Image 1 (cartoon, one colour):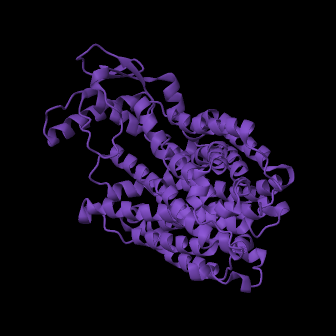
Image 2 (spheres, rainbow, N blue to C red; image 1 turned 90 degrees about the vertical axis):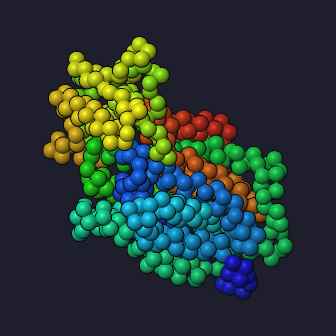
Image 3 (tube, helix red, strand yellow; image 1 turned 90 degrees about the horizontal axis):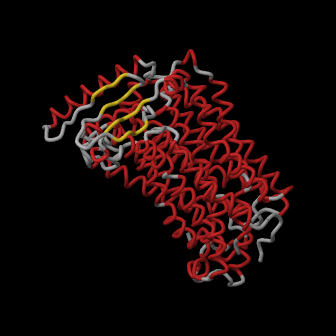
Length: 552
């Protein structure tokens, strides 16, 4: 990395088009790598968590999706320090290589059926490497572009890096959709899921080749040549109050909402439609691909707009639109995607009447909870079926019952029974509940003939506009907040905590909230809370940064 960053002053300035293309292409590839996993959660849960029941396996896969994000702040600190001391180019050349190698490795991992517990252990290791690398990627790419840009075009130029997320997601969805279509769902679930991961090796080669053509950024070169590069970026960024205050401001004003809005708009909406609304995965993929295509020019539009009217007003509009639209938008999505489910829930509500002491939370990421009480068996089935239910307390010691309108279905306890006995009791209870739900009009799957696909797409576009209005100008605003000496370290940490922890754990956390509360919309309180936090912080505390010099 030191060699990659040395002797920068001997080179002619890198053309702006090359700077943007190389930075955006590498970032698009890294997003492609990460998005494959998020889009294949259902397949991953069956392949690597076959030892868990369906609900626990699905939640474990969602949690593993978040594990990669959890390590992003660590990568941000490591590569941020490298970028602030040795240079931007060397840091993000290493990140793209690490990311590509880990992604390719996932494509050749053995399954749970082949090696048992070692399969998820190896998968976790690859996810950790992915998250670690991605933590250093984004900061390096946008800083590199911004430090080549003039103040009047900084939002426009950095927005091309933002739109790389759309290209990465579209590429991931496209390869998955094409593989499914060519192989068929059975073959894809068996072995074809590996193809999108293996394809990443070719994309890695292109990304590395493009980045090897780059020289160091002029802003960093100047402070490096002048001997002004930071010797202790951690101390300066987090140990000095003026800089630490900027780090906290970046997190609460922008990144809290970024993690919530973007990942709700592009990831949790998939979980919601597939798990709760029972929409076919192929339909979801096509809808999301359309939304991603529509999002690509919007990042650039809002980045350009922020160069004209300011970063703050554009981002505030995006996060406010999202926060106001979460609940009505997802309710409207149910009406458009599965009107039979919406009608059944309205006309024949479901209640679980049980002794509260007999009930546990309806999720278990490690798969160790038995869920064998009468309450647990009933609620586990309803949560996994995506059926909303209300909770009603029953006298102590009573057996749980499920009331579907006027129909009463008795559950049963499997406590103390052997594994085969538990399976038999659970199967009998679930069969009774399933029959009663069917009789009450609850559909097992969304009916394509009644699905209003264009309305679904229009609802998704509302969230796309909100997410792109927030994300388009965000890179320029973050970069303009921090001084060059510590920019890579200081901005990468709040960015990756926001996207890595708030955003990365959103699908898992929201699904867990739904499972615990019994309401398919309860998980939306997660993004509403974090987006509201940013609305307040942005409105009252975030200064306008448009036009700031990066030399001070």
